[in-house]
Length: 245
Image (cartoon, rainbow, N blue to C red; front, side):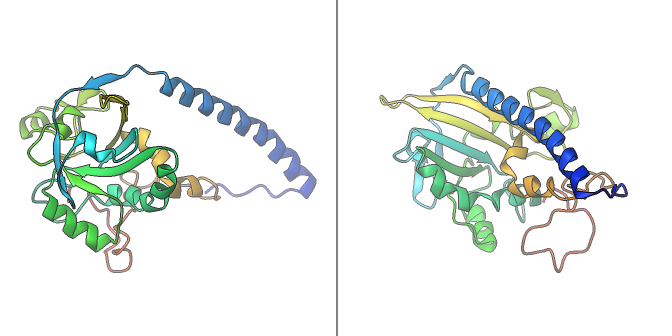
């Protein structure tokens, strides 16, 4: 961390007001970006996806519940993994508090993973989460929304992630996808984001951005290398934990 410049209260107020003007420009730019996001074209979803969760089999339409908007978090938990990705778990620690409020704005939010439901249920209980989480095991949902890759794709650096072909370190990837269901029951894909596009979901990062050290990740081998499952901070060794559980 750079040594702080120590100034008088009056000088601090002047510097803060100057920075406030920059912050307001950023807020306006973010509002405009969100407006443009809402104006993106939609794609109709006709494939009959069926998921498995705490209530048995459910179609994509049924996952909406009685709401017209659906946010799906693509959680990195593949078949046979011993535990979910620590970074996805970090993001998911923020979900439970938001879901009750999202419901008041006609939004359902849940997680989807390719692991079979019993495997999801075990890890969810360990983490103490309450949000809905279903399995896409046996359907094409993860492939169609570009968060699962074959071994050949990984070996040939042809994993299609974040809208480009390249390398990826695991067969599962994180992301968020948004859907809309109209009054006639037709479903549309309206948005998906990956990689740094998921920052907006991480309230802890927003808080870290306020403090003098910030996220303090520059010296780490990768961002989020410091993250642990919330029940592992005391007993885990202080070495980077891979997302590839």
